[in-house]
Image (spheres, one colour):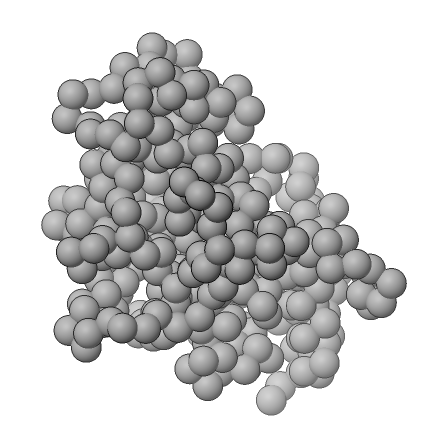
Length: 341
């Protein structure tokens, strides 16, 4: 394996220490992905330089001109404090003609807006919940076609930001309260979808032209409190103590018929091609009691910490974490080589 110089882009607050010794699980959780990527690439023999960027593009250009990395590992999820601008960093890397991991800017744009992606996929007859978008500063009126209960989310943020048990609403009064919460606290437009009772499934996909689908993964809720919904709230995603207390588990989805499994795999590939996703992505589904996989959202450049769904599903498929990161670098280098050719 060729030794590479790898520039790793991340938020300045998430630049990890050289060692996690002395840090609690809760303290290290916030920069776990960054630590896992940097430390694993170094152990694999690569020369790695973390770079925290948020307000300016110039540090990226300076690092590339001065250090001349072979590739950029892009862990940025926002720029200027806005998730909508992460695609601009990918566009800048393309202009610099430097290989970078993850999705291209067009795919990021199409997937980030939950409303736009659902409209595109609905045209291609991929099942998705009915929804409506509530823009900031506009009156909150539920369309008659939208049936309760609903789940209210940010239209653009991912990682379950702003999602709680109160996000599932069963009246117009509660809908207005939750939409207002998204507008005022998360500061984005809100989307309300018809709530699908069922199983939470995640499907990891890797590749540029040729796509590889990881084993179908499931988020399981084994100790929910009375009256609570089995949804991926912010606490479910980011609070280790809550995960342990509520027995929130992840693992390969079981009891899926071969026909259903094949249909989900075909669907995940179709979604990636329709939304023009490459590099790596995760497609989220809600599997109804009737066995219909409803598309929830597409996540370009999903969470890639060693303990999280994408890496764990790859491991279940026989791809260790170091090999997974190397494959993502290889995809980045091959994509740029194809463009240069």
